[in-house]
Every structure is written in structure tokens, then in C-alpha cells.
Length: 349
Length: 258
Image (cartoon, rainbow over all chains, first blue to last red; front, top):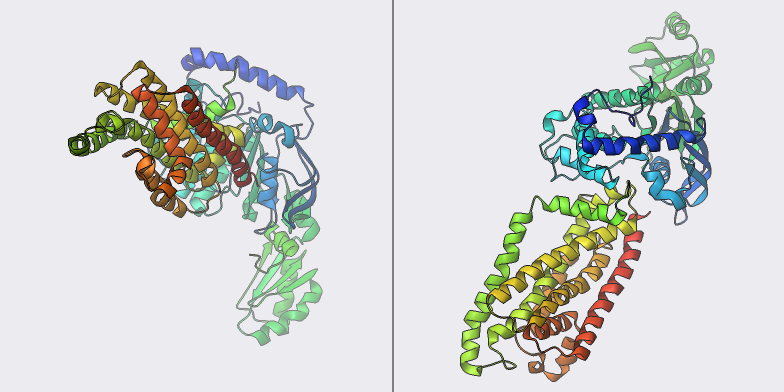
């Protein structure tokens, strides 16, 4: 059973509570809402954008993009800073008005149905907006009340979600002393409290240490397994590769590429990459003719990259020609190779 | 199932948060008027009464007390509409959290203003209760001082909320307090009738909102209100509150919808 968070979150709630007064008042309500959302064409995309534009003055942050996000998938927006990812996310979240093109979210128009759409979204903004003076649990309850979830039901969901976010032990602590990773997990738990149809996460893992990041992506992976539709922006290619069913690479407000991670690697990179690092610039220059064997040669200040279907053949040839790199190895091509090819290696600030 | 109005959900946040601070806040609400009445009325009042006998036909304490009521609501109206608004936009980002939910900008604004009105009501109610306990209310008309005091606070609150939403830093708030709130407190007819001001300054005093708030509250507490003057004062304050609200709708939208 693909269980949506709408039906239940985690194994937490004991049955005795589930038939309590306040809870029974909400069950029919959520059942109605669930029926209503499944009454929409089941295959209809949750988000449809056509020629979507976001302008700030004369600057176009998003410059005419088309995409569809379907139910149950994890859709990624990748791109360097300033590529227009956040602007796109804020438009989908119905928090930022569309400047041009059309956008439909859950079949509705954000310009006129913002309230109804947002009632079914779970938003994890780039910057935390937790109340540091309230406790962890109260942050969830207060947020649930914006969705008009009855107090008892809000509390029960909050307790379950803290379990999910591995924050149960901190439930009655204030948010202030929590680490960045804990705050991000709490923000994700908060976004889930309304049992959304669509989760929108803007850089959920930026600024976290590797442990916190892996825990967080593990939680997102679980949500995906439960059938929650996820829209994610990130800078971490490896994780996007694992989590996203489909993704787009954004650059300067447009889509530079789109597809599944595998398709993108196949289309824009090769199966393998040979990396060689040399002690001197002369030695590196002497190795450049090897590029004829590769689909693409990239020369960086400290090393050369050879994109190829057969890395071992190139390494063997290098040895035969007497090249002596300080280090030389073959690795599989990754999404990061695609990303850097599409958006360039220079810093964008 | 009937749904709660959207503005009420935003109001709910402020009420929920108040649970953490209500004790200290209520203590201030009680102590402040007591201290003022003790110092101004009993201390200064004895001196004034000894030399002047009476101000506008009543003891100095009776004269000052309703003015202090009006100024208390001004202070609450200003303080609740500056730092908390800036915090909700920049520091805690409460408004942004709300706007990710079904709430709209106008609900965020209305909910916050509703909360401020409740704060004004409590502060005015406590203050008025203390006046009554001291025997400083002279007729049943004193009950009108409650809406009068709330309206006075609101006439400061909505313009300040509108202004706070335009600010990037909190620096202006200290300036407003020092060069706005304090002079108004001193020269709006609380401690002496504005007719004692130099002639050129009197029209200035008459144009300030606190003057009208003080006049309205005082006439109600002393039971000598005339209908025409009261309507005039109330209309001035209501117009200011309404204008502040209209501007706040614009500044909130500009600040929060990008």
C-alpha cells in the first residue's frame, strides 16, 4: 500500500486516541478532502507551467520555462545560485505572483486560489521561519492551527511527526539551542503537519554537515516511498541523483537540460571520466594529445578530465606513452559532470 | 465543519505566544498606572493643589489620571506595532511562515491588529479599574473611556504598523519614541491644559492625536463630555486609525509579496 501522509503518519497513534472525540471529528473531514483530491483526474499533473516568467523590475529571474510535475514523483530543480530556482519555487508555493506565462497548481490558478492551493501544500523555505522562543512541539501546533486543524488533532500529528523527524526527545525544548540539522528537520515536520499533497523544499540540506544531510535525505526518501510528491532544489548532485525521478538544470532563468538523472548523464556526459593530475604544467601539456581518444577533454588548472566510454583504455594508453601522472583514475560519470558542463565552472555570485 | 476565519488564525498565533509572557506583561499593566498615579497625582498633585487648589475644577490627581490612561494606550499601541512587526518580518519571520499556509497578507495584518486591539483593551480595562478603585471616576459615563482609550491606542497602532513594515532596521523606532512619543506625552494636555502652552504651539498640540485621545478620555472619566466635541475627537482618531490601516495594507503587500 502506498500510504500517503494524508491517511496516517507513522505507526505512532494508538487506536484508543484515534477514536477520541476531536479525532473522529477530523476523520470524515480528511476523508472528504482525500476523496475530493482523487476526484481530480488521477493522472493530471499537480503542477503545470507554460512560459512561466518572474521579473523583478527589468531583470527576469525566471525567463519562460515549461514543466509538469506529476503525482508521486520527486522533481528536482538544480542550478547555480541566482539561476531562478527559488523564484520558481515561490511561484509554485503561491507566495510570489507570476509575472508572465501560466501556472496551475493542483488544477487551480495561484492568482485567484492561493488560499485553497496553499492549504494543500507543505513548504520548506530556504530560510527557517521557526519561532525560536516556542518549544519544538508548540512550533508544530501553532503552524497546524493556521490550517485550522483542531488542537487535539494537531498535537497528535505533531507527536507523530517529531518521531519521524527524530526530535521526540527535544519536543519540550525551545528551538533556540537546536542545531541547523535539527531545525531543518523540524521545518520539514512542520510542513507535513497539514498532510500536504505536494511538498516543496527549497535547499533543504544547504549548510548542514554530512551526517545531518544524510539523515535528512533519508527522511525525504521515506516520504517519497510513502507516495508524497516532492519538489526539491539542491546543490548536492549526488543526492539529487539518488532522490529525484526527474530534474531540470536551471541557468540564468531558463532550463539548460531536463530529464531523469540517467538520461542526463547519457545525453550530456559519457559513461566514465578519467581524471589525471600532473606534477608540472609541461607533463600535463604532454598528456593533452590523449584527448583524441576521449569524447571530450577538459583542461583545468590542476588536472585534466577525459570523458570516455572506456577509461581503462585511456589509462593504459597513457602508460604506454610514458605519461606519469601524480594520480590517475577512472570514475563513473555523475550528475555533477552534467551540471558543470551545462552551467560552466566559473563562479556565479 | 465551519472553518475559522483566516485572520483569527493569525490572531491565534499572537495569543498562543502571549502565554509565555502574560505574567510579566500583566504585572506591568498593573504596576505602571499605579506608579504614575502615585508619583504624578499624589506627589506632584499635593504640591499643585496646595498652590493652585484645582485644575479645571478638579483635584490635580483627578485631572491627570485620565490623561495617563490615554498615554498608556499610546505607548502600548506604539510598542506593539514596532518591534513585533519588524520581528515578524525579519527576525522570527512569523509573517513568512503564515504566508506559506492558507493565510493571505491581509489576514496576517488583520490578525496582528486584532491582537493589538485586545492588548489595548486589557491595558485600558486594568487602568480604568484602578481609576475607579481610587475613586477617580466621577460618573457612569466613565465606561465610555474604555472605547475612547482603545481608539486612542489604535490611532497610533495602525500608522505605526504601516511604517514598521517599510523598515529594514529598527533604528527609527528609538527615534520615534524619543522625538514622537515622549514630546506627545509631555505636551498633549496630560499634565496641564494645552491653553497654558505658548500661543503658537497650541495649534500644534491640537493637531496631535494624543491631544484628542486625552480630551476624549478625560471628558468621559470626569463625566463632562459634550456630544459634539466627543464626536469630533473620536472622528479624528478613527480617521487616523482607518488611514493607517489603508496604508498598512499597501506597505504589507509591498514588503511581503515579492
